[in-house]
Length: 253
Length: 308
Ligand SMILES: Nc1ncnc2c1ncn2[C@@H]1O[C@H](COP(=O)(O)OP(=O)(O)OP(=O)(O)O)[C@@H](O)[C@H]1O
Ligand SMILES: [Mg+2]
Image 1 (cartoon, rainbow over the protein chains, first blue to last red):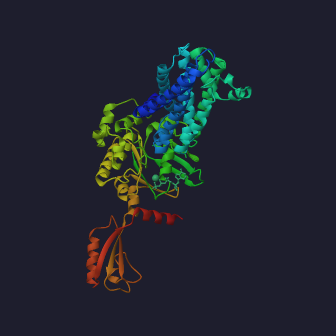
Image 2: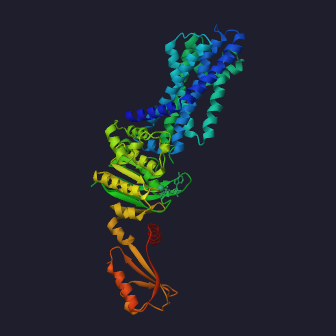
């Protein structure tokens, strides 16, 4: 293991976030706050409680997930796309590092940023709604797993992307629908049966459900299933990433 | 002695179907300065990129100090530093953070005094906290050199290090390269400047259309490269070269207006003076004269034509 290399990549990526601190934190916090105001306070006050949880509080885990998914994906995608775009990738490719080490460095940094952002949003939510966290340890666990999985997913997009447009459009076209249809704002039990079945192919459902369970002890799907699905998703992404680097697909001519 | 770099039967066909390297065999000796020459598009960068792990080879093997660059990539790459042809640096970073990044990436523990000395040697110390975007092109190139030296490689590839670099900086650069060689670093570089190859290299390789057409000791190559010529524009045309001048290797142009004298670096300097005296003895007047030296490109082209 080239620990120095992992550290170098990780710190470099975090430094990049630090340089762009305002964009990295302010804009997601602002947009999530708007969601809280509109859905939580304005609309939520007219909604009935779901599973015994007030609507405002019910959407907190979902909204955190929504932001964290977007940020993990786009951060990681951008992180690996930039060296490809500027040509600085030559150095990483010529370095005595394994694909796994490169992935740990880049994805670790992107996931770290998202976890921190998720926690900041969690604190921000406190201003608008009252919520409780029943299983704080699991809450953190689900958050970390989600950030890592979707940073891996973003990493794949960054490796494959051939333009800045693709870099932005692909996450938006994939993550946003998955997150909205993943039960961020509702329980999937509220959907017609057919849609409930279709939804089960959406990995975000398991994330949101598991995450919500760690807050309120209620979930759409079993917690065990949630965890398993997240791990499976993560391993699949990891496998793809490792393969991409091994073959040099879209990275090495 | 085992070569420090051993390239065997290396070929590269890009995805476009273009074959950039054809069965290249090359051995680089430990501690030498090797100049890889060739016209644009010959395959120099491709060869270097494969050795450094940036481009996948299509066929063939490369070993660095005995380590296979694919199977034993960790140990092989640890030895190799690369200064790329393109100015690829992250412009938002500072000089200091980019060199510490390079050192870490290559698995070396931090060493502040070493990096400090390195930046001082490259006259970058006063810029260490500047963002790279605030540096000039020549400075950026020095940053790339600093990045490659930050991890103390035993083998250094320099892909056109002096392209777009001013005279003074170029001289400093060569001085630094000599010092590196004295410290035991093997250096492989590409350049389009003949004087550089003449000045610095121990051996020279010429690559043309993906084929390594020549690898020679510099001194041997100098004999080939050293051709110079003196052209004299005559006032009156002549039919043929006067027999009194037959001792000189002269040629006459078709219109009889121009005499050309071939000589080389090694020929004795007084020969030209003697030739000019003999000309006036023969009553041949000339209105203009100039000397020229075959450019590296000329020589390559003629070399390739010979080979075809
Ligand atoms: N990624 C690529 N895909 C397809 N063809 C390529 C690629 N990279 C290089 N080539 C082609 O391979 C040939 C060799 O290119 P290379 O960059 O190795 O030349 P070079 O000798 O370094 O030239 P120069 O002196 O201009 O730097 C060129 O014809 C080039 O167009
Ligand atoms: Mg080149």
